[in-house]
Image 1 (cartoon, helix red, strand yellow):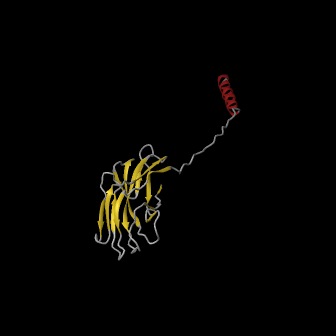
Image 2: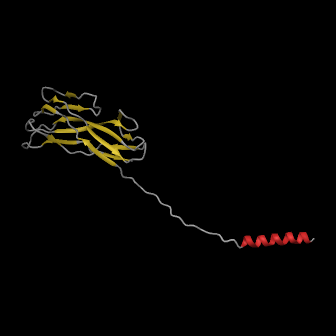
Image 3: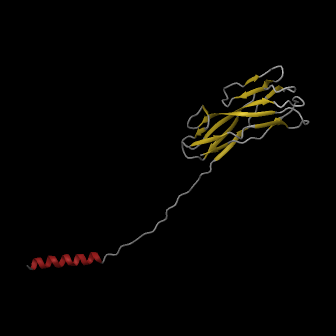
Length: 197
């Protein structure tokens, strides 16, 4: 009996001790850093080289020069009527080049090339001088998740979040029946390319 009473007393004492133990708390912060921005850089302009060009000053025939994004592909020319409008390459050009970095690994970026359309005009020339139009952009991935491949509307970066690619396009002679033909000199235009997640 005394043994039972002692055991019960010990159990009661232990329960009282456990009830008197204090609980402690610790606070902490939770955070995250957002980086939606990335680095997108032009490394070379689109250069159609040096050409001989004739515009149709009597009608609307046109000639085209297609500069491929793939640097291994030769440029091509064509004309709806070579007697009225023509382009001949004297010195080869090169595609525009771009680099992207700071993207999440293996992410896919969308290409919007609607800004790669418009006029390429003479830097210095009389009013009415023939100009060119730029259009039909093409893309070729140099480095990234799919190196040495044609891209259409997307580019996938590599494990470091980087990629490089080229942009080609088509140069077309003036179809507006200009008052005067092309003159020697530089012709240029400014265009935009958009990349986003």
